[in-house]
Image (cartoon, rainbow, N blue to C red; front, side):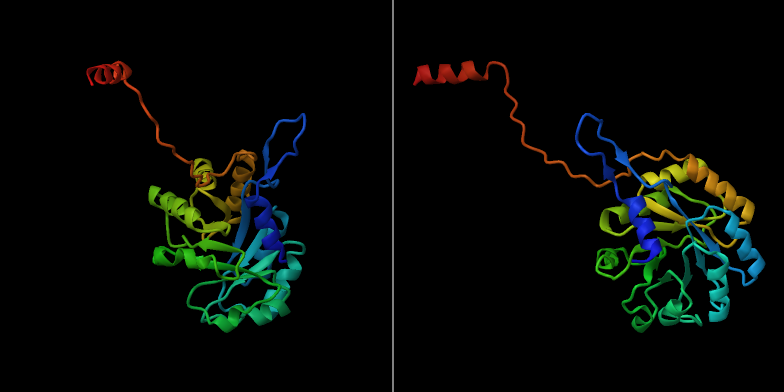
Length: 256
């Protein structure tokens, strides 16, 4: 199992306290949300700066990154799981991602199936606003660890984004991540988590300072707040008796 898969499972899975003389509580991973830092530069110095930030993983988004440079990034970030976005223009695919000791790959629906063959490396599927919602349930059948909502082109989060999260959460059995717009408040992070988001990914415009602030806001989130689930309760028919109904019935019998 890839390390990103293990982290996603810990955040998204609720652990119930054993029965006994203790109150039953819902416990989650130490981090309420996974924080994945987006890497867009090929400058090794900028990547080294991430080593001092408590991120959960890093995602390389530069399509022109060479295999040699990817290996350097993995070495610099040490114990941090590192992944890469692969698409039709990428120089790196699923096969040499394993060679570079990358922990996971992210891809969209246009990637060749040969580039995402089965293996020990983790896989995340990327969708955006143009993705056909009718196909969402079929995503559950893919050999993937999670789904990424790509909001890299969005400047601000809106109610529509939350509705999409809730809709996806109701259809998917996979952990849900989101690429964040440049400015996200603590209140918006709370809403994202309540709507079912398991992890967030910093976009291209984020700086080291803003990444640190994002980490701090994530750590402030209530750790034991239950995620919203689509719980369906059985509704039984209710018989409502009206006053005098029994008396009328007896009078009718007497008349007969």
